[in-house]
Image 1 (cartoon, rainbow, N blue to C red):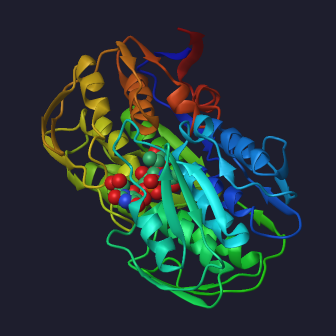
Image 2: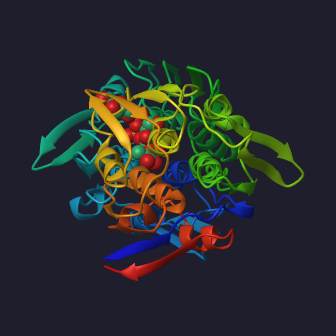
Amino acid sequence: MDKLVIEGGVPLHGPIRVSGSKNAALPILLACILPQGQVNLTNVPRLRDIHTTLKLLDILGCETSFDGNNVTSTVCDLKVEAPYDLVKTMRASVLCLGPLLALKGEAKVALPGGCAIGARPVDLHLTAFEQMGATFDLDSGYIHGRCDKLKGAHIHFDFPTVGGTENVLMAASIAEGDSIIENAAREPEVVDLANFLNACGAKITGHGTSLIKVEGVSSLHGCDYKIMPDRIEAGTYMVAAAMTDGDLLIEDCPFLELDSVVYKLEQMGVFMQEEEGGVRVRRKNGNLIGVDITTQPFPGFPTDMQAQLMTLMCLADGAGTIEEKIFENRFMHVQELMRMGADIKLKGRTAMVRGVERLTGAPVMASDLRASASLVVAGLAASGRTDVQRIYHLDRGYEKLEDKLSAVGARIWREKE
Ligand code: EPZ
């Protein structure tokens, strides 16, 4: 297994480019099952999860090619089973349920099981598909869904589930009749998927709001589509600039989609401004102030930025609180940050962070994707050496992170553990 070694204390300076969004690319890749004809995707990030998804598409009978930025995909002889040994490595595989049920009337997908941050059930997905006419059996860890022809339905989600909204959007795009999705997720990645489906001939309106309407069409065609930039990668670089008291120009930064993060960072004393070529990020006047954060569905503060903001709060004057309301176990980075000298107290799903003078480098363990990113950012600011172990978690969602950070001055390199 690999680890990242960081000699901290260097302020980061210069331009850093954001790659395509992992959480937009994954559903859009699986949506490539739907159209007849070739799909050409650009700005696809080179990540472990992308390779896993391309492997799943191959298993399902799609012919794909990936040159590190562009993906082409054509559906050939479509299969209906997503195997456990692949699904267990990436929960997003469950997003093939919608396309397969809609196209083939059958789907056999291994139940993804939980992960480090929580149980991650898919009950809301299944209930919605049952309303559209599917029936499900649970058979030795596999969800086996069947239907004659999926029909449009009036779906109401108890919780604005991102994956559930995406799964239903894909299925409803070629279901018989019209669908309404109430309490739909409003995340920018859901909007990117809807825009992709519309580029393939779907008739989706209201995406980005909590009320989405879909007019089912008989079939979809191929298209060319560019994946949106990754707002969480961009937000991570904003924190890295503030953490190291540096000055970064974040290129291809989806600034608008980061509104709730920008608002909190400004409250903490971070200066951000759109300029020619990107967004400039540095501290306003040297010190940072603690804030209170509660993670919410979009447009609220994103749970995927919780660990990174906690790391920044470790160096702020005063105290702040972070309430994690989306996932039940997303504080795995807290113990590791405390090994670096952070002062954090946990009470249920709320963390109380008191700022300290400095963090000190230490060997730490990554546990999930965003926790890994927060430990790297902590290491960039800490005095001394930090070894972040098990960075296969990080490789799932950050393209060439050590190369990008080295290019703006970080002393960071990869080693075998
Ligand atoms: C997506 O996960 C993202 N993953 C996550 O990013 C992100 O944290 C999450 O949305 C929230 O924004 C991808 O897009 C691939 P949800 P998803 O369905 O779709 C509960 C990262 O780091 N729930 O909105 O799984 C669930 O348990 C990853 O990039 C049900 O109870 O998120 C959770 O508590 C981590 N039943 C909450 O809703 C369901 O049927 C949010 O889940 C579905 C979800």
